Figure 1 (cartoon, one colour):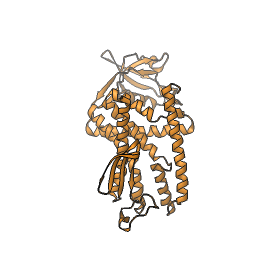
Figure 2 (cartoon, one colour):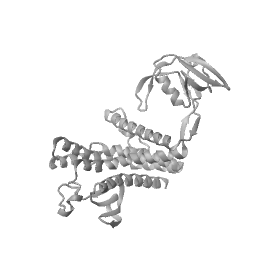
Figure 3 (tube, helix red, strand yellow):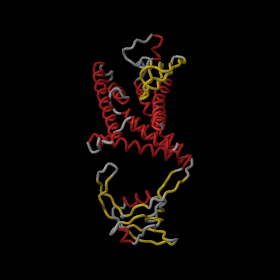
Figure 4 (tube, one colour):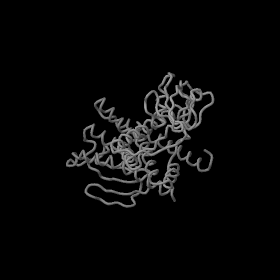
Length: 355
């Protein structure tokens, strides 16, 4: 039941905000909106307000906003031409299309801002855990449970700060102040170069001293400005990692078996429901960023494909030939179908224990 509830909440929020972006920007540019639907397929329930019919449709794996004059071949009454999407300036059309993914990013920022404002930020304390035998840290006299106070005169309040300084040391000796049983000591440690795997399993050279964190954490409150900066930073980090993941998949470095679909989302969402509201919100923010990037891919039938056509039109000074657009959209649809088959297959194999 938690899986079903989680999936409904996650997809409902993501689809609503994505389509809300298209809807609000279209209305801002005085484009007529004929339909605003959560879901595809047959209408379950709907209500018409003004020009727009708001409805919930049978298949919840998506949604859409139907704009007046969205299809270039659509006949639009002369009195409605000023409300027609096709007859709007190229920049306005591009902004309307881009608004959906951008609202997905905005949703992530808002969620993270709420989380950081409410709960602060969790940091790993700069306390030493394990020390590798023969490492620079052991040679310098660092011991487990030592707390790093400063490095080269810079006060250290989180493990990540220490890690960044060591990585950027280029192997030069560092003056390190430690706190051991309420006594401060100053030591000198010389980082060494090591080949370490990144998130994708690829080895990279970096400077280390051979220690791991003790795993002690603490929550630090953030003021509204700091919470905003942190939410922007967190969203940008997820965007970068998501784009990098896509590149690694295309390069064959990351297996396509890592891709997941609705079943995987449902499983993960169910786990977040059990973990609590904050965990569920963070998961929604993560998936929202992924959805935004997916929709910006230059694949016809996705928002990114439409933006690509508009970019070509802006460069050439004329719309892309309708025949070319139709063929490109067929190719784009085929790509999406193959992607859907792939993620459903991965989901099923995970459920049966084969992947």
